[in-house]
Length: 204
Image 1 (cartoon, rainbow, N blue to C red):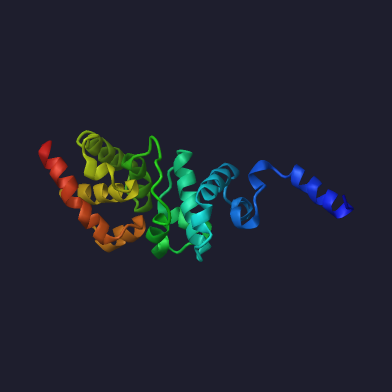
Image 2: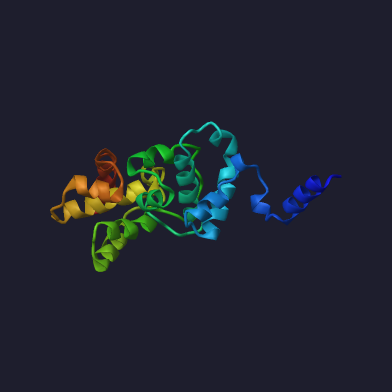
């Protein structure tokens, strides 16, 4: 065996398991360089490997980074609104919805729309006491049998809930500013209002 081959073999042996993939199948080091925490980058790398075949044909790598990092945060129970994750991985806010649809939806255990209410409220400056009111209000009326709600992306449900709550309590707000802060389109918020209203009215 030549010295160069031996050296390469030694280097490979000393490389951590999560990095022993070809460059096109590794985003771990790239995420670390971007300032993503090690535990998040490690889970994101796992997600990337699971979807690497589909990812190889995607030109905008920021979409792939976002999808993997966003779901890594979710799997670790560290809830972040999509807009905050997009800023971390170099994705524009207008591209978030497209990035979320890159691969099949992931089953994230123990993560619901309720987990996203506080981060959304924080992004638009709603006081903490009001956040608790919103969470408690909807936790008492939405049940597991509300399939239309639970089948939607939780951050969109949370945005719709906040908007609906503000509406029924007579709070004046700019719908466009609200949607931009939450990074959920006005159409998505408007679309979910009837579902939330129906559930609310049925339990009133």
